[in-house]
Length: 296
View (cartoon, rainbow, N blue to C red):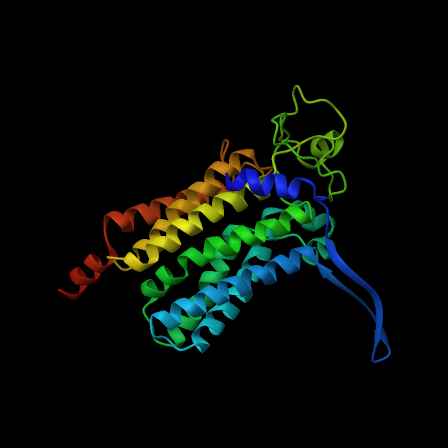
């Protein structure tokens, strides 16, 4: 129901809406600067401020000082964006070689797995700096990780980025003005591994994987948010997040356009499997039991 609502709500919106408000050229200190509010960046700001608000409320409930929330959010944002971009560039090396400047400074690059790794490093820095328990805070931020990702995917939709495979299903959407657009010739040229058998030439409809991931992300968030006040084993909520987020990306990857490196599996498939295995192992073997064994 969440997916149906968001899908039909945004279906009337032009998928390629990279600029929300364009202020044009403004002269500052003798230099002409083009000012605009970009939808991709705007949704990132919405994601981080939403997560900051909820994190601040939760830390206050648990008796932590307010500054900790701002530090965690800031370093998670810096690490997440940097990790996302690095992973995106590594995943699209052929395009980087063709147009390095355009790829590095493009609005694209919200790669979940890279953002998760970069954001984790950023949060770890804050936790270590304040001498806090890593797993305790991993549980606290777990629901917010998937929430930020879900909101960010709306930004991907508005700029026409990260759409899925061509489809004839009723929920298929066309991205006519995307870079690149969803035309037969573009898919054939830029994604030669995609099977276009039975697909007519011209403008194609594709899976709106951005909206699909947004909806699934919201569902996972609500589930984890509800469970956060009843954690019996430290780390269990974070490991549950790894399983759910990993499973979501693993299955979604089958209808995305990413290159396949190992049979039918992409790099994201492999990392998703690692997430699922890691989460499952530590849920079945609680981390505090390992601590007790080491101490004994």
